[in-house]
Length: 484
Image (cartoon, rainbow, N blue to C red; front, side, top):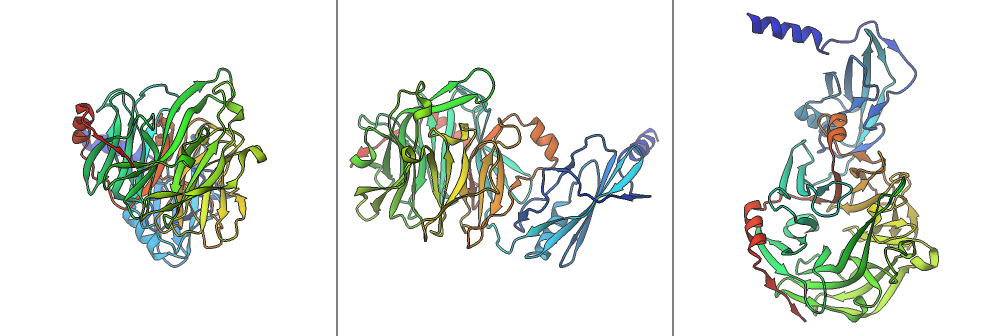
């Protein structure tokens, strides 16, 4: 009896009643995240949202599709049923869905103007995302973890975290065109190594040699899956005092090398191992070119403002595994006074997406880093203004069909990088980006003390045995690479 009375009291005091005596206002609701006018794929998790004013009593939301279907939620925030949401978006593929938001505060209901979101005809065709979560200011370790997220639900899975291997830094995880059957990840520090995932099997390499001076990182796969291009560099951090920028990441040396995974051989080219700093390589969609950034050596960290990266490319022959004998400079950093980094070709061969900042070769730490797009058919370059903010945008990657991309942005507070998704059409027009959905967005992002970085799509869930990872890492048994 007491339990029934308590349950009845909870019902009476909770937000679970429908709007009455509604006053309509001529303005759209202010919601978090700002999903108004975004374009989504049909298979994305529900775009749950909170009302900006935290002091409301209740929020009632009715969602109707332009091609039919209706769902409803009533509570402290807009919390949509996953199955109902997917049915609605599937029914309205190529159309739009409209949201009617009513809010109760101090016993009075207010109805706001309807707003729309658009459901793309282009499917995302990916199971989810992989990413690293890390505290935004760190020197060594710091609760680092590699995670994956089912983007059709709110389910997140840890692949490997620092609690399993304390003191190690996991980074630079890269799959071959979103396919985790071919993937690599670097574990930095003493006793670290390069892990290759080949058909769900772990293979551990020591990619540091006398010739390369450092292990491979910042990796990117050749489309055929036989080669992986990497940077071999030394990474350091400097921390600022006072307000403004908090951290500068810099490199004292950096070269680009190619790993042939069939025989664990490193392919070295003198044009990619100069006194300059070659960094962030990526194969073209057809594997015939290696794009990368390069900067002149400076006395870092003291001359950190002088680091200006150019965007370059060099030919690559997959049959011989050899690089070309000429470097093409596509964008000249010193000449323009800017820095061009993180070149990411779309998999259909049409676009290059990259970051532009006033300095540096690690854009996530540059407050003015923005995303730009180069049309590979015309050579035209333009800023993607819809995507950029006053804070850093970086760490972008494409979906396999080149119609969607994910990137990290610090737009919310200048410190924590969060994940945003957007679409692009055949003419290079991008849609308004939307924040990765969460069950209760405000609570989740307010309590999240990690930054997201190095996000990428994954076609399937990554099957990696974390205990095998730990055992092989701590065993210090590594396959040595050879120099070709």
